[in-house]
Amino acid sequence: MRFLQGRRLDAAFFHFFHSAQRAALLTALLVAAPGCTDGDLTVTFVDTHVTDRGEIQEPRGLTGLTVNAYTLDRDDGGLRKLDGHVSDEGVFTFVDVPKGDVHLHVKGQGSNEVIITSERELDLGELTLGRPDARLATVPTAIALDIDGLSPWQDEDGLLTYALGSGTFGFLDDTLERPLSAGTTALTTTADASLLQVPGVTESSRGDRVYMTQLVTRPFGEGEARRYWSVGKVYAPPSSFTLVEGATSAWSGTMADVPQIPLHLDWRRAEFAALAAQVHPAAVVDRHSVFLTSQPAGERVAASVSPMLLWLDDPASEDAALDLTYGNPYPSHWSAVGSVYTRFYVDLKVPDTGLTVRLDSLLSVSRHARAMGTSALVPVVTPPRGLQIDGMDAQITRRGVGASPKVSIAETGASGALSYTYALYRLAPGSTSMMLVGVVHTERTEIGLELLGALQQGSWYQVRVTAQPRSDHAVNRRSVTWDGASADVISGLFTP
Image 1 (tube, rainbow, N blue to C red):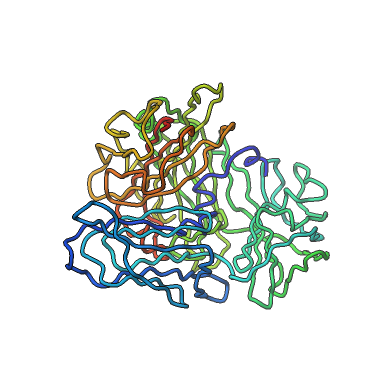
Image 2 (cartoon, helix red, strand yellow; image 1 turned 120 degrees about the vertical axis):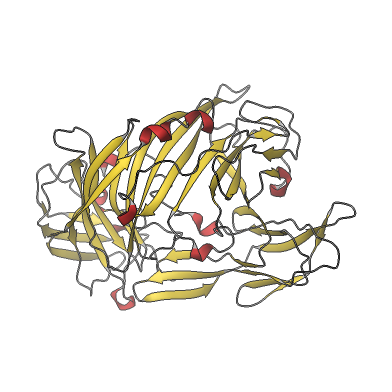
């Protein structure tokens, strides 16, 4: 699929795709008078898997996780560890927790996350798409194709293959033995299913259903050179289809037209672009995007990739009134949701190395597809202002910040209650790759980075603070809904 070649698939595309680990840890602070308790604190790690035959609840494998809760001792200011235990069902319980915010630390499985909250019931299970026992094809697995009825092929079209139960996802046209020629309306070649981005092994006996859609290249409007992509055709193999790893399967038949749904967008891109300097003084607009997907989990955000219905990518920052169309061949109980977002980037020189690191940032608004055209698409949340490290401007290069500096924001960037995600990154030695150290979720406008561990001498770091309307997304992860917005502010590089 050429329109995606050479591009990083953004957060709106792989929304939480790699976030099965994002709930792997927590830390929390507890400020309270001794002896004044607020009952027990429970932390649940039970995952929900959405499949074609319904939802499956499964306790998380806790191997490698350590879970601790603390209070802040009012006498010496240190942390006092709370007693707790874990059940076979994946529930951690800490007893007689004082009133106030809680400090809960869960570490392991490749993540480091902190949650500061006064809630006493935390659901850190993941909502994921696909069977928990789904397998991936690891050896060449051929599909012989004899399918007609395509829309006349254009070089930037794509054939998106998706199966919920097996988690299958990817562009089949990227795996073809012979590439499709412009104008062709038939597939008479062989694909290799093991080369898909997620090469799930579909099993009809488990209820897996496969869809292959043609994403058709379309102009923004009559006479327009700019293009977008949306579903125009669909082929569904028989319900009896099972992919046999290492063997050759066959698909034959005709792709069907998918009824088109109109989508009008009043997209105020200039308002998004105008916030570049608030993201960072050196921030530049990379592009503006619209993305629609079909969500098998309904109104809830799942930690897995889902099939796209429409994709639009445009570097132009002027306002746009667009009339687009897309098809939706997926089950009616799946929800069609959309996002508009602007990606910014900042290039920063790494002192004493001659290297330049590129940092990126998003400003996004998400709605149900049916609500995308009901009002103008404008920023709902703006980047927080006044990002500081220990009271100093954090958006310039800083040396000597110490091993445990405090990060703060002075302005929230929106009216009403917000919550914040502080993400700390470390520059990998000798490279331009920023590696995630850990994440803090809180409603506070100041945190100490020691929550994620002391900074290492000789390393360079960077912080991104994301603001979003206050919700329980950090403590009730299986019930997060799609309607929302977010905005980032990013720091410069700093070192202890």
